[in-house]
Length: 192
Image (cartoon, rainbow, N blue to C red; front, side, top):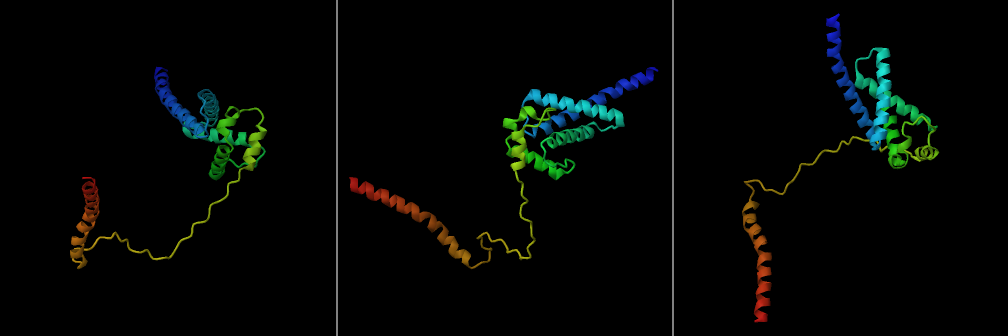
């Protein structure tokens, strides 16, 4: 009897640590939607973790982070389904488009109070989401063009042009300075 109670006490901190990790992950995920209010963020995360714990107890799942994220996706999908838009929240592409539509509609600035709310979906937010169109980018095509070698303007050590460059490079650097000193010399001679 005492051994089973001691084993249960040893497993309890591990479970709490894994549920703490799940809480942090869900909170970070919800923050990616632009939800910055600590009170709203904490309430939504705690509600999701409570639901995930009850789902884990029913199914016997031992992965708190996984079940918490599944619960988060399901909750957000249910919330977005209230907008009247056809939403298949199981697809990663659809989730990304939903997040982008919320950002385009200025969700964090105007409707953060209604995020995951059980009340009716704001009509203005529903219209803003419906008006956002996410069009695919042009398709990538492979080219069969041969790459050209890179040229850096450096001469090889045996190149005959190297001798003439040894003379002209310092001359090109000195000519502007000679012109500047000559201009100051003429200005000084004309003022004295």
